[in-house]
Image (cartoon, rainbow, N blue to C red; front, side, top):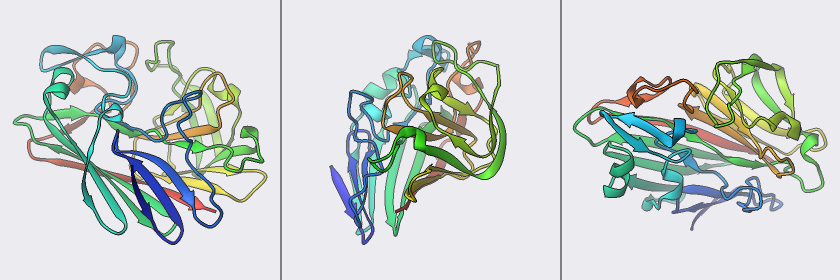
Length: 291
């Protein structure tokens, strides 16, 4: 585990998955991330790479061959190594190897940096094509935000606040986790009250949000956390379908699960990212603590 601290926040990051495990406000000790209790979910904030969601049947085609990948890919279950550290940054890296090439036929370097700036935790992703051909990938975030943030409150005291008015329908998931071609009206305005019934059908997935900031807020206190993610075309929101979990995931993505009728190669998948030889894909998101 690696830690960073400034006058306002302390964060902890695990080498396994380069996963952010804790965001703590130093003023009062409030923890803003779920603690990975496996009763509910074994993660806190995994990176999703080289796919987001599921591929149909757990299999996909690339370069004329068939490969198998688990949900959300392999980065979240793979050890990274710490390649750089400063007073306010940590940078981890993962490179393709014999094991990754068996399930993903592209050579890459993935760098994930964490930077503390006042009350903000900035997360920067860089995907580098080190292959001799174009590579295709998706990448996304899956942070589990404490909900409620205050232990004295309940999940239903909380709501999501969008920084722009939304009029949007979610894309429901099939039983196998694939996207359907249906749409269910869900957002109307700048707020969405939270309750566990919303997630009985799995995650809420959107492909047309105008907002680039979504906050977990409470009707009973002023504490909140904002996820800022500019130019992310897809967003997901999730808590376990059985209800009762003390967190809500706010997930900005570059890519998404297969549609239930998709059977093409990965290069033809909607939302897939393509990198030419030597090119670098860079994007970032932030957690902003309003304590």
